[in-house]
Image (cartoon, rainbow, N blue to C red; front, side, top):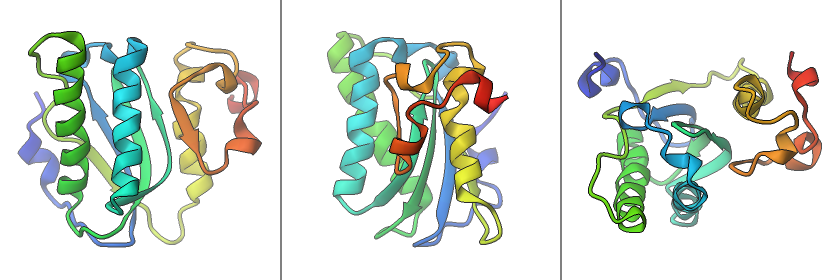
Length: 162
């Protein structure tokens, strides 16, 4: 079993670094199959950008997890940025669903991209998730993703990602 504190070992947050974060729903429940619940998370990603905490490069919200690539802006604590998204969205999803459940699994996985890493390749991996999961044949048919390379990738298909 994963423990949030184990995931923090070796974590280093620095303003203006690019982070690739993955976080799962509690017990991998497919909460984001519900369109409104998914949009709550996405709206919170946008709010984080509006508040200048993050600058999102892109994301894909799968039924039971989130992949998010972003630059950490005004805050220097990665846990704070991710915690804000998870905390606010959990409260709003519980209100929407009229339930009181754990929405997110404790902790998250993160990877700080080094200068020599190709941002577009990481983003391509993130965007291709619904294709690899056989949720759609064309990424343009999946509602819960976005990236700054949108015009180029909106017709990205399963054949192209193989």
